Image (tube, rainbow, N blue to C red; front, side, top):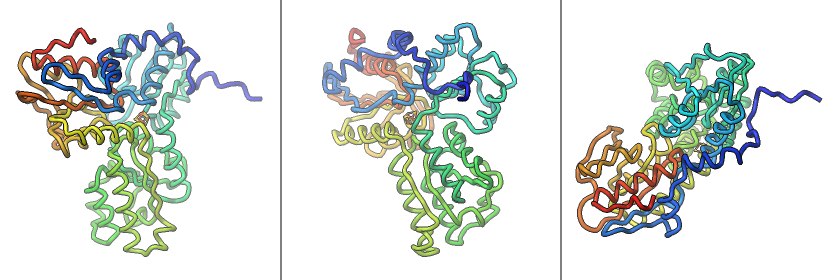
Amino acid sequence: MNAPDLTYFRKGFGLKQDVEATLSADYSGQVVDRLRAHDYQLTLGDLTVRLAKEFGFCYGVERAVEYAYQTRHKFPDRRVFLVGEIIHNPHVNQRLREMGIQILMPVDGVFDYSVISAEDVVILPAFGVTITDLQTLRAKGCVVVDTTCGSVLNVWKRVEAYARDGFTSLIHGKYYHEETRATASQVEKFPGGTYLVVRNMDEARDVTDYLEGKGDRAAFLAKYGKASSHHFDPDVHLRRIGVANQTTMLARESLAIGEFVGQAMASVHGDAYRRENFRTFDTICSATQDRQDAVNALLLERPDVMLVIGGFNSSNTISLAALCAEQVRTFHVEDALSIDPARGTIYSRDPKTGEQVETTGWLGDGTRTVGLTAGASTPNNKIGDAVVRVFATRGIDASALG
Ligand code: SF4
């Protein structure tokens, strides 16, 4: 029997009980508990806040953060590093820094591991890391604590299968996002493995135009150079396509892109060709899907405004805000501090343009209902802080709830 590998961990250290109290103190919140206990609604004065029934920390984030805490506990005397942000929430990352965990940040997407030695401990984030990064770290002989989410691993399996079978992985995602970079790299497990990342339906249309003979090779390569394998050639690598997606995209758009590309292939080459040479698989994770479904249910109640809390670089939060903005005036804020009750202002990211703007009088007058949701990396205490500031904007003191 092989000796156990004592430098690679992905199933926790059995220290849950040792870190539970700290985790709860750092991230749980009484305001959210109260909202949950009262059918996700809180009315004070003429203001009502309604919370979506699925929101905030997802199972993958909870696991990754808990695992990071366990790692600190397990290795109190070692240097502990994290490859990039563990999740896209500035408070959580700051808390980890305060615990002495050093966060390595990439330059142009590349991490410098020269500071890492065999005595160190390195945590991989919930998004996962690229194959090259993992190989580099394993070669160092340091302890690697891998918190890659199981739902991300499922996407990797899909992409691996596409590469093994000679299909180009067409990934609906953001090519620069950590998860998509890690996912795309999985094709490298097979010689000739190829990927292409498209961000949205407009970019999917570039692919279908090319399939239909309307594209320009040089222009296509110029536009997608950073979003595709270095050897990608649209004349060669769009013949067999397998669709997958970053787990946090807008589910509806991912499905539409898969359908759209499949139809284009069938219209050019026929249904029999499509059956042989096109595959699609929805790899949106269930937590993302549940949050998007819950916000759709909340929107049916027609809140006057929507407040979406989460990092401006958080993909799943951006997807939630985009959904809301289709129907209701929506403010995507990073945290409670974006809401200034004294000035009646809110600092938010416009879900349609991506611009960051300050708005005065955002809450309006009279009886109002504020719909509320939060991305998968936003802890409950931060959601509660925002609720308190929403009420404070109307001069209502809700701080006793927290
Ligand atoms: S958003 Fe989904 S894939 Fe990402 S960590 Fe959460 S559960 Fe995992």
